[in-house]
Image (cartoon, rainbow, N blue to C red):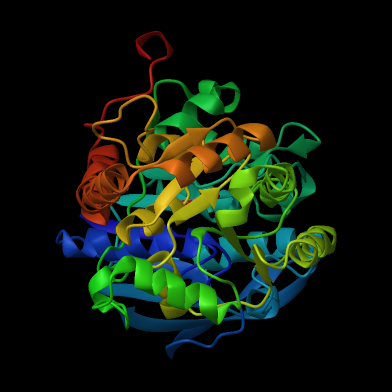
Length: 450
Ligand code: NHF
């Protein structure tokens, strides 16, 4: 098949999990023997050789578009630069700037397709997240190609209708305020999201597209998230833990780690900080160690630092960004990884942890719930612990329970986790299912068959 992928993030350009997902999908599809082409904004990175240029009229002026082309792991990537497309802030500058960038990306994508169409007519267009709505709308309008839209995370934004007129898509904007995710799903022939639970949690949105909605789980790249690649791979796990804690100036104890954005809307570091405060009154606390890694909202950073200062024997807060290799060493050394998200469309942390034998304790939401098998509900196959989101007391209880688990249970959780991450959540599985989405031979989400 010839597949055209549209996305605002493509590695090495990365803001969040979207980049990993879109890149892995493109490369996985190429590995399955497809011809895969990507259109993405250049974001001022100037990657690849200049392929061509053309002019586009937009917002009362003209923008000169430069197209660069590179081949990356079997995928042909065209990056579109010029005007706001060369702005280095991927989702900026400002909300208006982002909307204009998205419109320009749409127009430039259509311009590039006009040049390529004689030699590359896609069988399917696969667009990712709402920033690609104008590109998807224009390519569909002018070339009528079958299309799939994937929601990695609902943004629930509203866009003034004049942006659609500016994109020459006024027919898609009958109201003054338009939800671009809704529009993209409306245009697409099939709609997917990245886990089954997220789909049902957000059914109020997805139900509008009943009949063409399904889920496709993301995958995890266990060739990188692999114990064999650790510097300390020959040491027993307890020794690795001791060394890591020592590096953070902590004495040995059961090690719990959080890694993620400090935000107020999704990742739930506040729930963890609250539960550490709750736990500090428990005798078990003496033997518990917490490594909290991330940055973001200044208030949350300040709170985390205050908790670190209050419990210097138990808590370390790291607000600088760590390299992937360092993070791998940590996953392979700590006992537990905490994922207290309010919601999580898929989530990578729990699977990265499982690949490296760290046991996830996560909120029972979205992709976390679909990937982690809970010790309380299925002890034989369990890979971790699930707790209700936003509940600091439940999380504190789960951490005390985890701390008390015997060696045999811990070993089983680790082995089950590694097996599940490696076998059940591969990108090959994901891409195989996307191919069935492309040709329509995939099961749909049906409310009365839940
Ligand atoms: O893993 C890639 C990522 C997800 O849960 C994640 C999210 C954004 O919030 O699909 O997209």
